[in-house]
Image 1 (cartoon, one colour):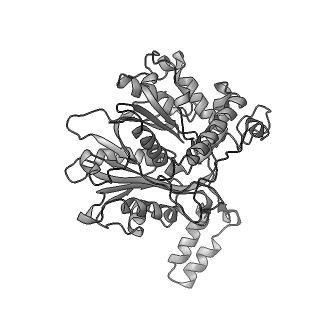
Image 2 (tube, rainbow, N blue to C red):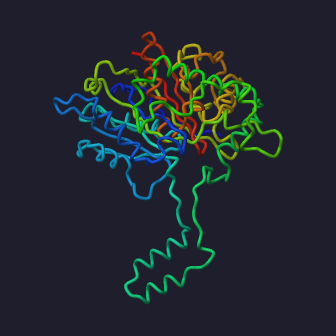
Image 3 (tube, one colour):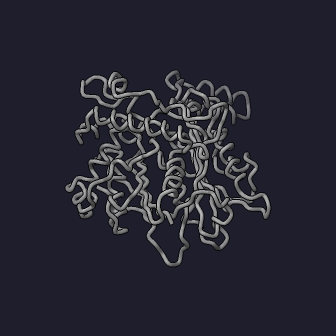
Length: 438
């Protein structure tokens, strides 16, 4: 069951909001070319590059920064503020950290949109970073408590008492796992359930993965990503794109989340990889856009929706399938009216399920609660420059990556064209945006 979503309906007392394309690091497989950088180290070059785009004369600067990282770092309580200061940004700019799993920097854009008013705040720098190569391993809570008592001890006797209270069973390391805390299942395990329930075949998944890699490779070859991606640590391109893959190669990979039933379909080839990277996007009013270089691609944020589903009675990553039809119905649009679809590919099976659900009359009527008369979804318009399966998925950076990519794609389309951008997130949540060129 889905509850009432958070939306941004058009309002006469608020300025129009625009998104402008930002930049990002290359996305690198965890343990690869960016493995020496933590989330802050990944963020700083991106923030510096964004700030450098503002004209030096006249003191141009953003009025607000929203940034996030999903995997916590014990030394960073506000990564947004730390990234801004470390990048040499004006310390009088407020910087806010946010987190919503894979939707982190997309929700950050929505949060920034709600704080812009043309009365002092008209331009925001938004983004996020994830360093999957630098996940910190912690101590068990009882051992942490004993060590804290040891350090707080005012005498040798106090410290000795703290040490002697340590029990053998407390001498454990806490190793974070990419699992949902409430269900105890990983994202892959949940998606295996989804694939089985929606009857998504291995072949369908591999075909989506192949298209993602081919589209991403073609995008790189024709220069689409050149002004969106910074060179960092001798890494100049996304390292997870495989232009030489094929259905035959993908078919040889073994299932990784269901290895025992004989019915597992999710593999390393049709799932997004653990990835390091950072990305940013601009959020602005028309007044704020005046501070950006005129050649910066920009499109209007028409509407958005953030929603959650009952993860105990619905598949974990299904939230966008509820939001997308509601968003379109609210704006009196059909699928055919949308010229560009950027749908996050956490897994090829998840994308295939969303496409199937969006065209299922029973799902639209009974679950999304909209009229099923939205038409056929134009699959050829989905992720034309590749999705997360190929490009990679640094959790907190994906929102800014997918938004900047969509902005550049849509900006090149005829005036009046629409785009839908969606991201599913752990916890049964999702975020969806409706964009318009002009």
